[in-house]
Image (cartoon, rainbow, N blue to C red):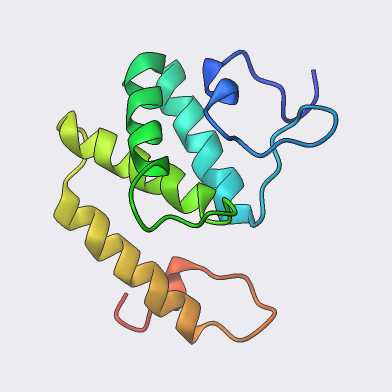
Length: 123
């Protein structure tokens, strides 16, 4: 089993970018982390494949999305956030605060250095 192989049906998610060998392809490390987090939460039973597919599909078909699919993992994160909020697992306010903290951390991180939440000047 390679690093990318998993028993999760999430690997069959609609439009998931894959290599010629069938492994998921991630444009940035955060996208791989979002994928791994989603697989982990699914495997822990927090949501079903059907719930995930419905939520991701809704995000992928939302008006204004990139025609070329370049925002696929933004859709992925939005679907995961919505699913967790709808199920009462996460709080939308907490998600937004964390998102803003990561954005500040990214802006405060020198080029070429890893972005860490501790770089948030308000952290």
